[in-house]
Length: 514
Image (tube, rainbow, N blue to C red):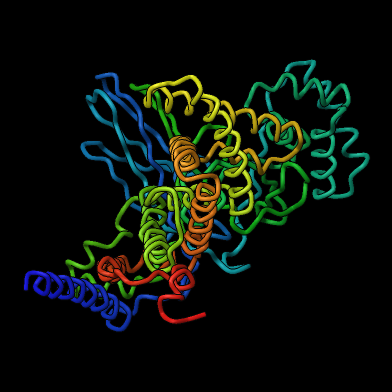
């Protein structure tokens, strides 16, 4: 009776979890029209998030940040500022927009956020500038710099036919490996972080051509710490045309979003120190589901409050990966309990699969085999020293780190940049794999150790393929309630005590087979 009662309890629990998960899932799909596929109903919308951190000195503090405005290719749809206790004012210096946070007294770590949503416009979606031609201010130059600039300008005017060819020739000279004396002098005297861009703008301004440096980011799908990219723009034909600073082509990728213009940094701080600016971008999947989200806020506010899209973008990146871990665990349960694949440890293959997300599968398997083989050889050597368990494990950790470093250095010298990804492997997991494999090798033989090692790699590879699939990742992120169904399946598998598939051949004789 107790066993039957336990089974009924288990089936009831699993059924309840599955019904809740499937019920919420069906309601979100059919009642609120959430998309099932990644990219379905995708809007040309992007989320931008700026996280600013600094340490206040206990005195009045002021932080200025350049913020986006409408451009010919992008339209600002929405924006908000998160700054508890700070005053806020916006301004329009030159061709930019800027927000300034201020506070009378602040001390210790401070965190401010700026978030915006921008829409990608179709070609020609915004009219060109119709204002007067911008005034060109001659750059401030020393006599020696002016002489060098005159030499450079004379060469460019003699060899170019229009603005496009002028810019192309200018950048070719500035990017040349062996520039002339005039160009070398100008680049050497430029003290900024981007001398080519700064000299190019000054040279064009010197020749009476309106030019400026533009800064922005490349819009990517759910990316943290997006780097700032700089190029320059030249005014021609009633609009500012962007040029690639390396090739001189009058073109930048469609996903390059112009954030601000000029030589000033994106943020400036007074009354504090250690200013850090982190930019994150994401396709606005929530905006693609704007109608569904709006309906959820009215019809199911509790469900709407649990949406993962309400989290900061950098946190969404973490959970987009974290929510795929149960899928890897489910694959592990199936292969171990139903198929009968032997592995090292319970969750070690899943952790290895997470490392494969960064190294890619082929290089990940290759590097894992190399580092484990070398570490195993050294582990057998340490066995002769009769060390205690903890010092032995610590020694293996040190050896693993040294081996990873050596492989990275050798791969760099051999021109194999893919092998540098070995640094992304979890060293503790590799250490425990080496230790476990050596113990199995000593107690049960090399064949058993190699079988478990092969099983671990097979499970990790299959888990990687499932966890790295874009549509599956979309499903578990948009519909996390499906993990309840997965949990119910795992609970039911936990009661399975029959033959494993790999054992059928082993026990075939007991069933009367030949």
